[in-house]
Amino acid sequence: MDNDLFEKGLQQRKATLGDEYVTAALDNADEFSRPFQEAMTAWCWGFGWGDDAIDAKTRSMMNLTMIGALGKMNEWEIHCRGALTNGVSVEEIRAIIHVIAIYCGVPQSLECMRAARKVLSEAGKL
Image (cartoon, rainbow, N blue to C red; front, side):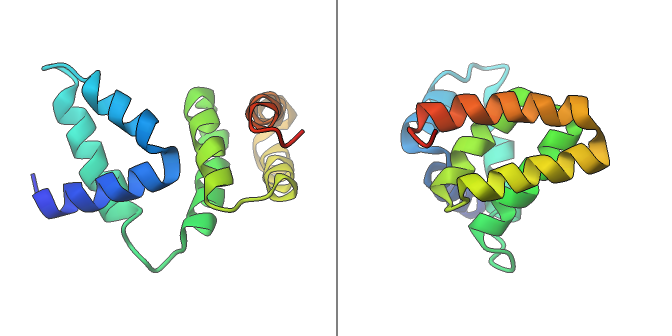
């Protein structure tokens, strides 16, 4: 593994998802899951998120849309929290959910709305 890419990814991952969450994910990794955690930190967060062509706020908005379209709600919640950290507003999250409704269907947007309400309530934004 490219250690520089891992370190860059680790910084970006912690900046978006929080040090506590990322440290726990890595500390809880075992012999089976550690290589995946390390690869995703380097690839997704170092290579993908480390590309400065797209700012973190825009990338968060893109991620919410794509993860919502895939229906991966656990990841959607995690990235919704990260989106708030990266400056995405409540109004922008609502607009993203509207786009998900248009292109992915109302049932999927309802799942995103439920997850968003949970995250926004926990963050004191609702």
